[in-house]
Image (spheres, rainbow, N blue to C red):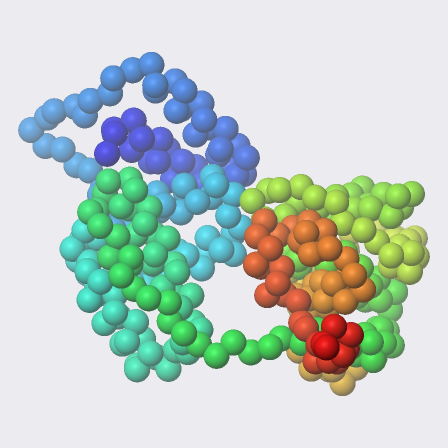
Amino acid sequence: MDIRLSIIQSVTAALQDRVPPETLAMVQDVLTLELNQYEVQERCTSVIVTDNSAESQLRKYIATKRVEGLSDSTLRRYYDADLALIRFMRKPLYEITTYDLRFYLSYRRQQGGVSNRTLDGMRRCYSSFFGWLSAEGLIGRNPCAALAQIKYRKQVKKPFSAVDMERIRQACDNIRDLALVDFLYSTGCRVSEVARLDIDDIDFDSLECTVIGKGNKERIVYLSPVAAMHLREYISSRRDFSDALFVGKGSSRIGKNGIEALLRRIGTAAGVENVHPHRFRRTLATNLLDRGMNIQDVAAILGHADLKTTQIYCYISQSNVRAAYQKYAA
């Protein structure tokens, strides 16, 4: 591998937990441009100490993916899965074979009771890591290339019904919770996006909100008049000085875990199962498509780069299928 690329990766790996992703990307760009002017060679001495360990390469891989804009939760999932594999194998990365990977996945299934769905997620993590190692010239062929997708039964994830939504709203015992529920459904935002929002991100005149999604991509989402009304009431009722759109105890910004816990409590009170942030997002996508919105526009609202992801989100009700059949069948 080009020593200049190795320097850049080492620097970004060292800085990844100290600076924000956009600064890390800028550092990488500056180093790439500056080092391009030089021929760089390793210093030859009698003793050379280089950290080319598997875990060191994993940290460089994570730093590279951070620069590419992957979310912290995705990076953590990649890191945890790959680190567990490395520590189990206890051999250099270039010696890991397809058989080793198949053995490890089989071992996890038998010993850990891991589902096929989880195993396939692990396979995707390994494929990304070893694909990067191969592309960087650190190993030869990617041993994951011969690993087929692990099939699993895909459960249909249903959106909230209109009755579910009404029960959830009625179970909200304060204006903050009601504003949060309506905001989640109206905008279809990810919970991590909601947790980062500030009051200034909301434009009540246009009923729009600017969010920063995956890959630090900015997009516009929209508030319904009812959601905007409840949000205004909530903000007006606050006596704190926090910039955060939603706050918890002590007037501090409510985080991802706090929002999820709050919704579980509301769901229990409402008698509705599986009340979590992503289900509001799925419900909005399904309802928009049912009412005739173009799937490309739905994808733009959700912040999806791939329409296949949007299709996964959307639940097709059998009543809609039956109505379509009756309309178009001969």
